[in-house]
Amino acid sequence: AQSVAQPEDQVNVAEGNPLTVKCTYSVSGNPYLFWYVQYPNRGLQFLLKYITGDNLVKGSYGFEAEFNKSQTSFHLKKPSALVSDSALYFCAVRDGGSQGNLIFGKGTKLSVKP
Amino acid sequence: DGGITQSPKYLFRKEGQNVTLSCEQNLNHDAMYWYRQDPGQGLRLIYYSQIVNDFQKGDIAEGYSVSREKKESFPLTVTSAQKNPTAFYLCASSPSLNTRRHYGYTFGSGTRLTVV
Image (cartoon, rainbow over all chains, first blue to last red; front, side):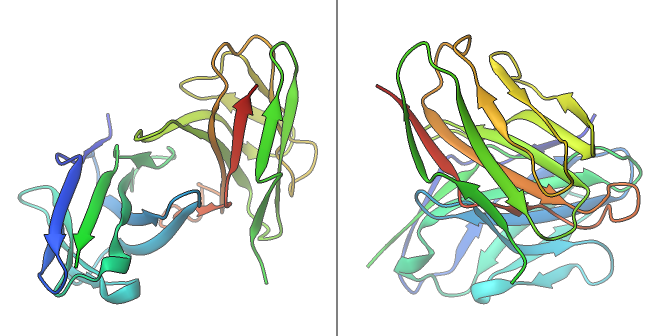
């Protein structure tokens, strides 16, 4: 069965420091992986996705994610955090060989302090 | 611009009443979804539909009902049988899973339902 885990409920970083939000997954076939961001009282916004190819994926707002097949991970990163990056981040996975729905992680709250 | 629209943004319900949340999309997406989000919680799937006139229960369908009479519309009714309906409700859509598996979902901006 497909699953995705975000091991940290909250990540705290200082503005200007690099940030990492962790995600690990489990699928039976090749994974399609996604990151979404949610600001308070808003819907989820797409940040980036990995389908195939380069393991480093670049997305919106300066975010990037690194796909690591051996560690079954897809961590979200940004070299220099902004206070405005504070939000709830969701990782999601779909098994490329199935017709199933996206499976979402529980979300990680990112707090960036000035 | 194409998108997905949820209305109303805020909804108040008296106990024992049914209420219907609207979700409309003009993205020509085949599949549509309803999620519930509680404070500090992740997303829980209520219902989904991959094609007109067909829908499937998600993980927490009890106390909810849906219809899919048109491709563009997927309304959610929160019935009086739902004992704890206060939550944030999100609608999403995606292209056909059969042909566009690498696409993600497009989300609406949500409806916050409060029981008064």
